[in-house]
Image (cartoon, rainbow, N blue to C red; front, side):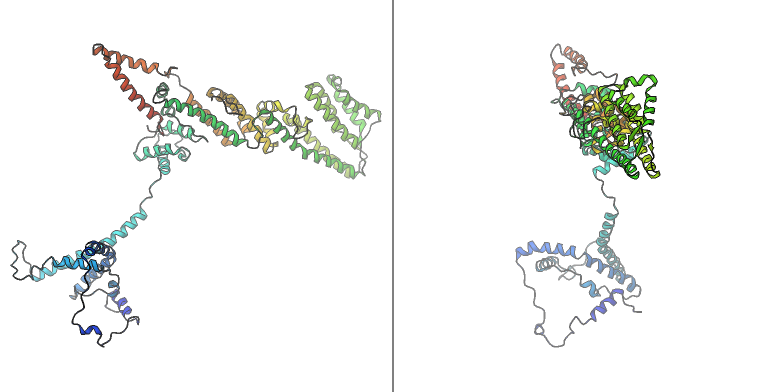
Length: 633
């Protein structure tokens, strides 16, 4: 094993490489000179300007070299010093020398000139003995001192690199600075875990509030302030709406006294609070309009008639494939019987007469329906499958006419005849035809039961107008079967509707809420009424899932109602007044009068009151309206 230092083995191998030419003993042209030619001096200006820059740049660039040199020297002092072989003048290994950076001509010249300004005290001619009080040390002591100073210098030269490494590690390990959004969320989470956030103790998602309120929340958290629980909850609710509503400090805190004072400051400071109230009213309206547009994008308009027509057409589209399947099933039964399937006409007539007899229902049966029974009797009970299908269609038309005219007795009587017809059995049918007929009859029976269970479905199917043509039922259809429908009926209705029909149901409910809020659904005109809106919301809340269909929409309509309460309701005990000034004025007048009296009638109190009142009012307005107002407890 070699005794050489680790870097010396590397340096030796580097020196052995053939990349450097071998030294030559031949005299070169420079051997004619006894000493190298001195470098040419640069100008004074270049030395003055470039010299310091080169020296400073070299000092920075030589940090790696200084560290390497210090490491080598420190190693030699420890290892070679123990063996008494330490040579302070030993050259650095080639690898260390290679990374040394020298100044340029201007820098070298500056260093040379500077060194000549400081004479060697001991070498100077006629130097006098040291007349200072510093004691003179012996040779051994001097070696110890030099070695200690040298070690200190080595450590000092290593320090910049160690510092850079430590800085890099610190930079990597240091926590990443929080953004405002992150700081706001952290403040909400600390508040939730503090025990002051209520029973739930769940942190709200602050990304849903405005950036301004996030900044205020972040400031409170970073200053170790306390968050007001009610304010945070209300601000989150108001600002997480599609169109954020900015609350005043009193509204956010739910503080009756603050709300009253804010109300009485209307008209102050360029009517800033009054303008905020107007903004809140507009934001509530805009929220309703935006939610309406987003919830029912496929409806032609917000017109109740159009919504009714869309629902009717959607139900008819739902019914079309059912009718087609039933017709196809009957045709299959007929074809399986050789194209001729005779029905039990006598059984039909007898069943119809028996069903009409109780309560004298036969007297309410329209003549056209009575004619079907009479025709079957006169034919001796003969009725083909084609006759059967024709009678079914005729009875459906008669029932529709009776329903439109509002003749409930006729509708009931026709229904009995129709039930008897649907129950008729085929005569002389083959086994296969009988199975197919039973399948067709079951399909028809199921459809009929579905129609009877869903009044809106039955009304739409019984309507005689084709899809796309205006129905006589459209005007009142949504009011009667949607807004006026029971929860159970709506649960049966909504699944039958396609996208357009579903949007029309939602649009009808949103129309209702907007109208109750005093807003025209088509134009958006009107002033938002908290009382009206919340009354309407209370009415539809039990059926909200069936009417609105989407949970996010339900949540947002509820938020609108809550925020409307925050912005427009004054709790009991409030002392607001319609003049917005009476309460504040009465309190101030007492002090004003007392001051004027003290100054023997001079209006000192009046002048002071007006001045101070103006400053106080402006400050209160700013505090009430600042971003995130009320969040700090």
